[in-house]
Length: 441
Image 1 (tube, one colour):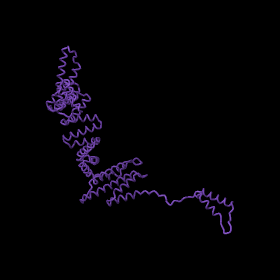
Image 2 (cartoon, one colour):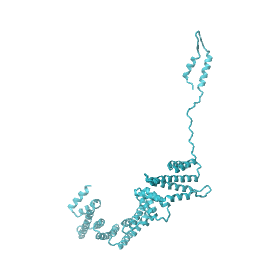
Image 3 (cartoon, one colour):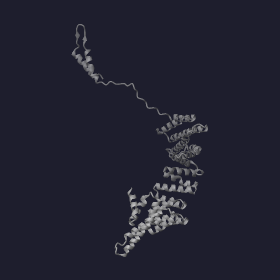
Image 4 (tube, one colour):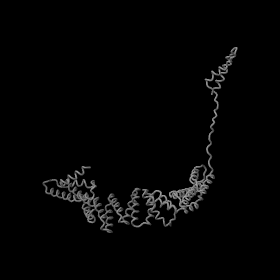
């Protein structure tokens, strides 16, 4: 577009100077000439760029991608690039179900080729990446799974035609043993997450008659429990019992109970605790936790019956007697709690909880007596009640002092009870010591 600044220059050219005179062009012609340029100034002049619009890259034909994949397998090189190109083609329009299945199957063959490279290095005693050796197989199984899944999608006519089933099964069978070896490899490195993936894959495709299946189930259970993946723990745990003895069986049963508890399945948790008590009575975890449940739910009759059933099997076990003491304490039957605490202490003189239950029972009896004690100092019963209450505090004192001796660091447990005892019995020296100790916090 012509600028206004050009006009003075154009006007100056309208006058022709000669040596003799100046010929002036008529004003009429000048005006017409100016109007012509103003008109031209409003015209848009097309601008042509030297940069041409780039065409979108052409889509590589599927045949070309498959040729590249076959070449990578043949040359044992470039498998990852060929696989990525094939996987990138999955979103193409109008790609048939069988074509997608073929992509996944070809990718599995590329994974197998990458695995063969590492196998050859190991055979030639060259530096081998063991992780890559196993991971390529796990990737292969993943692509075979996707191939089977897509292959099983019904055709437009509703018919399911499994074109790749035999090929995927044959390829899996060929490498299944090394999937198991991969699980062992990662388990030895405490890489429980990867180990579980290998064991889970192996268990999914091996035959039900496989002699290794129970042991693999045990390894898978152990790995998933270590990861805190409790749903996976429960997936194989029942099969894992087939290869363990009583000691490891008790541990597995505990894993099972803890998994139910973590998953908030209270019914299964309680049921498996009871199974654990019956099958592994020497493994205290089941009995202790089941007793706690009975106490929380106030199922005192069931709790006592459970303890008695185990006392019949092993009357020397102090834990069973202690559980009766605990249940009776929760039931506010303090005399019986004291009785069963003594039974516990006779079998184990260092059973701290038994001393605690006994001491608390005496203190609670003292409180009950204090609430109903005679307050009329002229009444002979007043002195009798006072002596009875003092007797209960004196009986509680050695129990709580024993708790302190056995658990000196646990001041929260015995401190306030000894404070109360020493205060009531007017134990000046002992009271000053415990008062100072509690104030030091």
